[in-house]
Every structure is written in C-alpha cells, then in structure tokens.
Image (tube, rainbow, N blue to C red; front, side, top):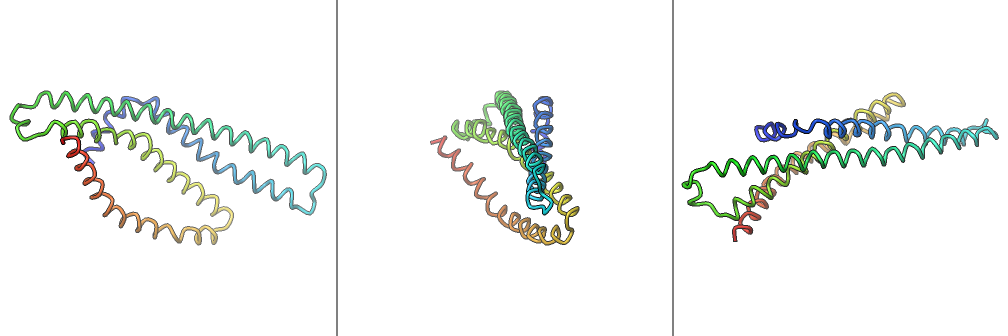
Length: 201
C-alpha cells in the first residue's frame, strides 16, 4: 500500500488526463447499458402483434440511434485509452527520474555488492509496469465495478429473480481469483528477479 500511495503522488500531477479517463469510462458504462435497451426495444417493436407501417420508421430511428451509440463508444474508447496512456507514461518517466536521483545520492558502499544489470532492471523494467497499473489496471477495475453495479440495477428493475440467479457465480469468481493470486504473485516476483539476473549477466 505504501508503494501505491507513493505512485499516486506522481499520478496527481496529471489530473487533466486522469479526469478525461474517468469521464470517458463513465460515458462508456452508460453507452454499454443503453445499447442493450435499444436492441430490446427494437425486438419488442418488430415482434409486437400491433406492428404496422409506422413500426418500420420507428425501427429505422432506433437503428440510427444504435449506430450513433456505437460511434460514440468508439470515440470514448479512444479518449480513455489515449488519456490513460498519457498519464501512465508520464508517471513512469517521473518515477524513473526520481529513482535515478535517489541512486545518485547513495554512498559508494551501497554499490559494493550490486550489479549494474540488476539496478537497471529495477529502474527500467519494474517502473515500466507502473504504466500498466495507471493506464490499464485501475481504469479496467473502475469500469468493471461500474458495469457490474449498472447491470445489476437494470436486472433488478426487470426481474429480481433473474438478477439473483445471475449473481450466483460471483462469489465463486472472487474465490478463484484469490486462490489464483497466491500462485501468480510469487511467479511474478520470480519472473522479475530472473529478468534482473538476465540483465546483470
């Protein structure tokens, strides 16, 4: 947690791209919730026993609305990706700069048993993963949580029984992720250590 707080100190310097990222993510969640409603309304209009010539005009308007929604979704995905990567790579650059300044202030005794490749791996490869944290992990978690809440609310409004049935696998997914994390985290640390040894060699 201390490392995350230290990273977020750098992320706060880039509020504009982060705000754009959050705004575009909220727009994406809303768009992804509107699209199924359009399709459902279109299917209901076509299959209605009272469908007539005016139904075709209504369906055509819905089709144009759906096209506009998907174009807007593509634009929001671009804004989210671009803004998130701008913030992510700026954070990586600032972190590398700060770490470099720190190692310049260390005494020569610190470098007696250190390999140059190990130090370079820590500065370059480890800090490179912060871009994935800022640009991918955090936005994806926020989007998925908001999507889960939105879909749950829509299902509850339609049929609470269906909503409860659809949420049965959620505890199993959370449990499987916790079990998987026990194996992934040590493997990830071993991979980073071996990468450092490779750079040292």
